[in-house]
Amino acid sequence: MVVRVATVAFEGIEARPVDVQVMISNGSVVFNVVGLGDKAVAESRERVRSALVASGLSLPAKRITVNLAPADLPKEGSHYDLPIALGVMVAMGALPSDALEGFTVLGELALDGAIAPVSGVLPAAVAASARGMGLICPAECGPEAAWASEDMAVIAPRNLIQIANHFRGTQVLSRPRPAVKAFTGDPLDLRDIKGQESAKRALEIAAAGGHNLLFNGPPGAGKSMLAARLPSILPPLAPGELLEVSMIHSVAGNLAGGQLTDRRPFRAPHHSASMAALVGGGPHAKPGEASLAHHGVLFLDELPEFQAPALDALRQPLESGEIAISRANRRCTYPARFQLIAAMNPCRCGLANEPGHRCQKGAPQRCAQLYQNRISGPFLDRIDLHLEVPAIRASDLILPPPVEGSAEAAARVAQARDIQRARYRALGHDAVACNAMATAAIIEQTIRLDDSGSKLIREASERLRLSARGFHRVLKLARTIADLQGAPDVLRAHLAEALSYRPLADRTSAAA
Image 1 (cartoon, rainbow, N blue to C red):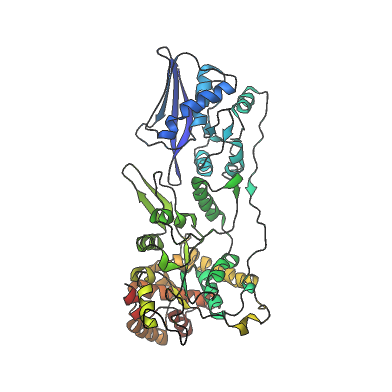
Image 2 (cartoon, rainbow, N blue to C red):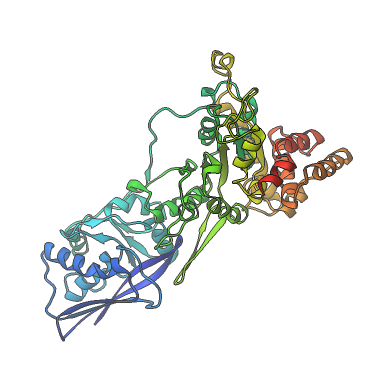
């Protein structure tokens, strides 16, 4: 008799069904696992054997064959331990033959029979719910699986003995409850920053429209402090966004205790990060920082210090909102709709724009140009707001804290986001949540410039040498500025402010 147990294999955040087939037959005493598994799958034989012995069961002196179907789909990870063990237990008669029908199973086994947590439980639970099945997973992952559906059966045992007793009726395992991550410590607030009113204004515009932003200024000007406080003015994740973000973090193994949160991700990788660390990859094609920042913020501090190929690898996801990782034997796609916030010094010494400063490399302009040449022109063209952040003076630091903080800015941002969602929903584009996500064709439907506005954008495009992408990004930015003011139309003043955030043409061409 062949026992079948349902489990999954992961391709990106998609959980593809896998059929674990177990057969115990007469013949030489051997335990084979076939079906294109990796090293972790091959080693599951010893973990299953030891876990069954620790649970009071001994493998029969027969031939045990486990097939992971479809056989041409690569299987990676240790989450196949539990379905293999349960399939063997059913084949041995230790569990009822129909016990596992209607359940998707995943979990790693310890040598003492305990069930250890694994990655990807939330995508597996969502896929199981879509197929009308329940889920059996480790106890630590139960709160994560409970988010998939209120009506789905979730069994979260701590060891093999518990699940055996549950199916025999001698022990009842209650359904786990969804867990919410609690944040401790003092929240970051814009009120902590004195001065830099222009930078705060740019940060609010970026938050309102989901735009990319680059701060350029000397060390100690507050660029990193400003970026770190962006999440405090961003709206919470919508239910659909929360599910997408949590599925990515589940596959990456970042959901400690299965706890979810509606706060937008804020990822700040070190400038030594490789291309695979930023966009994803590695032997198992794991998501990178860009995908982990999905529907959130990717903050790149000391931007020119990043490897140029790594930065240029972000150009495609900045446009498409997803990352396709291709390897010789597999291809997977991760969502990567993130908001890029970057900070940099004007030059390596950081004082190129300071009056009276003399650089050891000669003219300060030459030092700044050599430093900024590390960033490609096409990458800079994808950034909507370029802002020079001046140094903070002592006269600013001795002032009392600002009257307005993150709460007031967050209220304006939320109002602007509501206006944008209502606008695009009325046009039939429910997937567009902010102006930055709108395509060129969509944004042109929402803007009707008067004669003065058309003249301004035409003259500025020639003077700044805007590309087609830059032209439409200016329109999106002007639309966001108008939304912050509650204006139904984009006026000349909105365009003028949007154009003030574009870099000069000579700087962009120098960086190309």
